[in-house]
Image 1 (tube, rainbow, N blue to C red):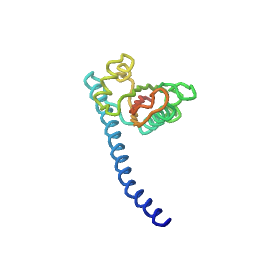
Image 2: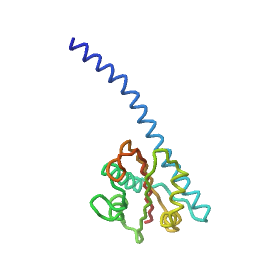
Image 3: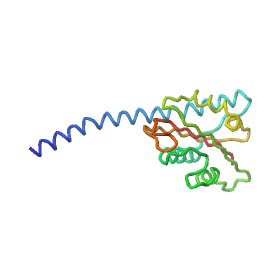
Image 4: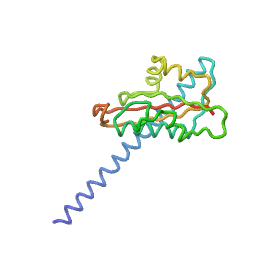
Length: 172
């Protein structure tokens, strides 16, 4: 009898696993589409103001992803890191000054409903003067984007299902 129960449990797990994997793959592709859409929309916004497009930076994207994930897991929303350090120090760990004579970074954050799209994210940032100024910064050359989805976010998010987007801007 014990063998049959174990076998039935394994068959149930095997039947559920592909569905969960498919949901995760869909969510992952939706987040990647959101990230690409945000970058595309920011660049279109910049071009409409006579500014150059930003190049996607692997290192700025890693910094953005780390911060989005940390905020989601720890339940806070801030440009500062969980340890209280300033955002530029956090980003510098991924996007170092190196041999550059000039180095600067900026950051836009948002958290919203899980259905936020690139146009909605861009509009929220356009409606906020500091975020708008960041997007239209003439000095920026590179950008990193991260979108993280959480089913039940702790802390500041009140257990709600949310999406967090981080955009890190840089020049060096």
